[in-house]
Image 1 (cartoon, rainbow, N blue to C red):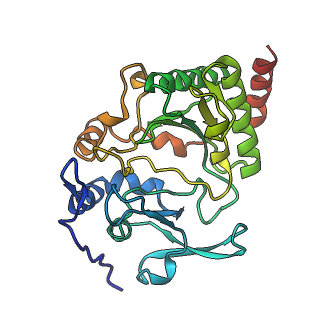
Image 2 (spheres, rainbow, N blue to C red):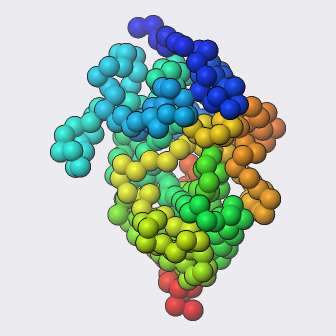
Image 3 (cartoon, rainbow, N blue to C red):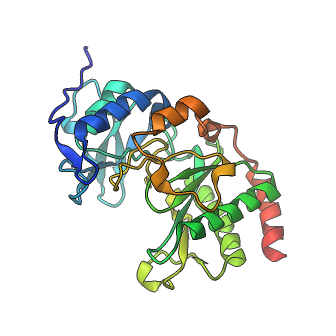
Length: 299
């Protein structure tokens, strides 16, 4: 069966302040495909659709498989929240990526686990989620504390911009542990971070309950079915920003998520390669690391 994504309305302006069109978005995904597809392959996607561009709030569409072409891979997964099977799209090749982007999906939001091993994520994510009262320098400070924890316990982590206001730090798990274990492990790290930076960090998810300048260290992104923008994903934000993998030497004051866009990301990866590929590495020995983390928390 021939695969072919019919691309439509290429002249529609998605970023009116930047004069960036849907066609520009599709061109970016076409060129960045070799870099983003490894982080989408065999993963269910939660579709956030902005068919009228970033000035429209858009909508989420999880169950998108029924209307998709036969050549786009789908996966049925039971949803406890809706008590029904959801037919997710899975993006395994360029044509599927273009089909999904043509739906108005500016961003790509994959699960942490693959469809062949749904209960065991490939990594955990520490999502540094600031309030509008925080500076990005505050976000960087939190990321560097997490980096200290990684170094002190012998773990390796990989940082990327969210493409919006935060940073994401991924720690490889290589499917060794289930989601409950992953969430609990991430909570231990988040607790140590809030102990070290009590003035500007919190485990309180609700914005209304946080102090105005507190950053939420979000460990709950490590539950089954939770999704974040993939590495190299575009975001529906001003400037057409991209979720950009970083070298740790770049995570310092002066860093800005606005520095990484669809206009310069391809050149960056051509120069630096895929800074995120280690995320799919062998993973940690959780038992040994937890012993070190508990000792640090008690110290």
